[in-house]
Image (tube, rainbow, N blue to C red; front, side):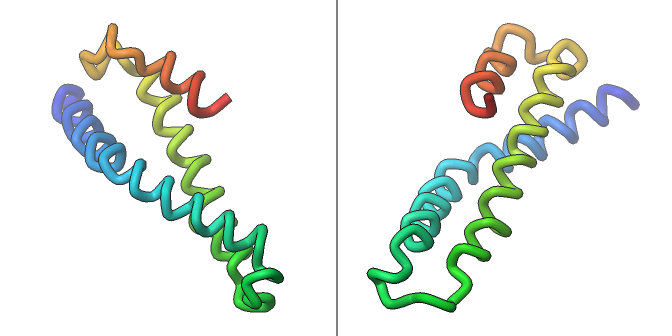
Length: 92
């Protein structure tokens, strides 16, 4: 049962990890739009709120997933894959 749980978790994390680069670009664009909303004439459109809701929370959950993977790398059979290094690089 633990192995099934680990495999299911690994699959879920792998699918999420595939979408991170595209989402990062999207968040970069939203952040830029928020920072330049007055110049773009987009004041009052909720760009900054959307950035905070969609990107800051997702970054936190991304880091929480990486931390969990780092802490459970032996159970997941992923030792030596640089999970803890990646967590430290991306989230601290």
